[in-house]
Image (cartoon, rainbow, N blue to C red; front, side):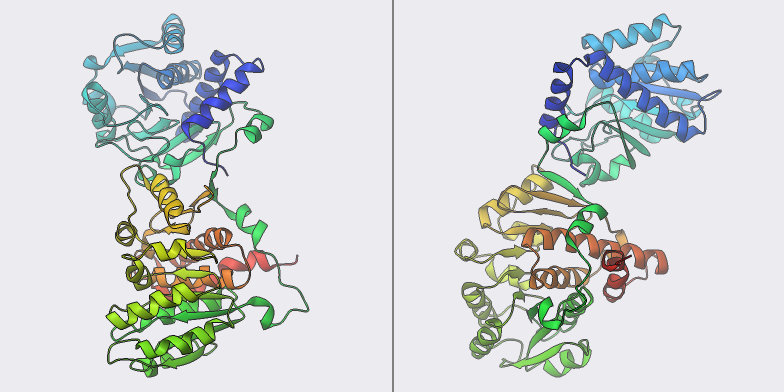
Length: 507
């Protein structure tokens, strides 16, 4: 599924109108889709009380149109004029039609909390894709009334107060139970913080042809099962371990022995042929004992805390025979370990997945990433993202895309609705995962999955997109079995085979 920004939405609608679909007809279709969603949510509109908050623009027109459809189906409908003053021509037309049919339109000043307490549903049609900035005045007051009311809230296209492209959310933005996206999904529906305001999202067909959709196709897409199925194929019957890549994992230090083991588990559970786990000698007995039996554990020269500079050449020698390098899980920070990390980055001729302290080690020397000829993937959470020079003021998609271009690397901005971006302008947003995954170690498993797929030969951006989806899907399986409070990162690794199983079937 593609996620349409405001410009793409407008181009699609203009193209449809150029082919003879009048703008009022597009609004009528959107209004009917909105009314259908309310009808379904209520189990039938007849006899129900619905309050529709309408702005002064096209979104308000959608609201007045939906009010008319609901009234025709037997609902008692009150439309509330939040915009006041001049309205857009189409909005004015839809309001006139609603009033001419006997519909009840009231000024916002005439609405009180008691009226909303009696409502079965509230429709939010104040602002749509044109919103930017902060809510104020009547709009802010209306959003507060909507959020405080006990009724189910259905938003028209976007919850009012959320921005279409950036997915930022204004203070006091409407929190919907259901959002009806007109024609296509938008970034705000699936990227935080706006995602938390959207509730369940349904995409309503308003008659934009497939030809127009294909012509105006945005670069941002939602990672879904179809995307993964296109890239994760069943294994050949005559294959062997050498066909599925060799991965070198470099990490571990005093006090951080679990991270490289979790990364190794993630890599093995997602199908890598051979996983080499290097660990400093000072923690090697712990790591070797805790690591999966299927991994090849390699002791490396160390200080009393972590990697020694003497580990560099043995690591480079091993790296030369591998198809990907995962650097960073539990690596720790010291002058020597940072020097080892930076030199490995410079000398790695295979795809590099940089995680955790690998990111921290390079944060003051990020130019070496642009100097690399082989692909690079960085997997920061928000704090690490900022250490790399990333900025989130314009939203997570714009921030990830800008940093990917700056670093010449694939950026995995981790979090609820993980965003992946590459230097070529491709952006993907994950659709799986849950709050139970918000615990130390989950990112290590993810790094292992991504590195495993890269070692198996998957193109880096695809390895990232498929990896975050599988990781989230494994988390969803674990949450369903164990609940979100008690699940552990090791549970994610253990559920990866179940997340991948549908894509390995030959049936």
